[in-house]
Figure 1 (cartoon, one colour):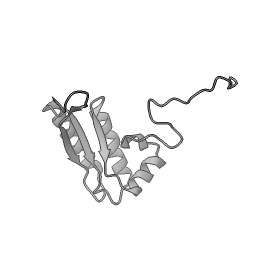
Figure 2 (cartoon, one colour; figure 1 turned 135 degrees about the horizontal axis):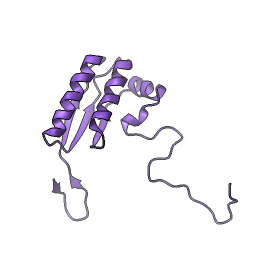
Figure 3 (cartoon, one colour; figure 1 turned 90 degrees about the vertical axis):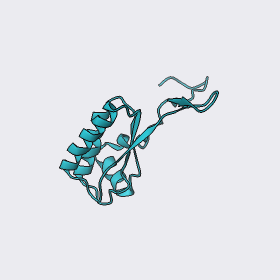
Figure 4 (cartoon, helix red, strand yellow; figure 1 turned 30 degrees about the vertical axis):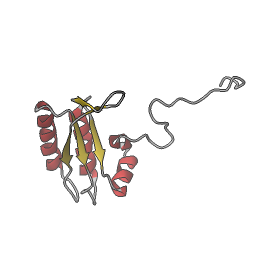
Length: 122
């Protein structure tokens, strides 16, 4: 790991994992999880899953992403390139957090509402 300079965020080498398209299968999920585990074992600091090739997502794509997230456990893992249909499907099944984005009507992490001194308690 190297630093980008005083006061900046450290540079973390990111490894890319590609979700196959147009629609991943259950077999793909198993192979991807095995590959992801191996990447972390071999020292990958962070992994980015590229879902841009998934143009006809189904429940197998959702399963693949959920299993990848579980395989990553607490290690850095995020999904990029998800198209509108994959985003909609993840939202429908309640797994939009796999994309690393806050759900609708939820504030992003670390954001607190302000309270005015004259506000009545709820």
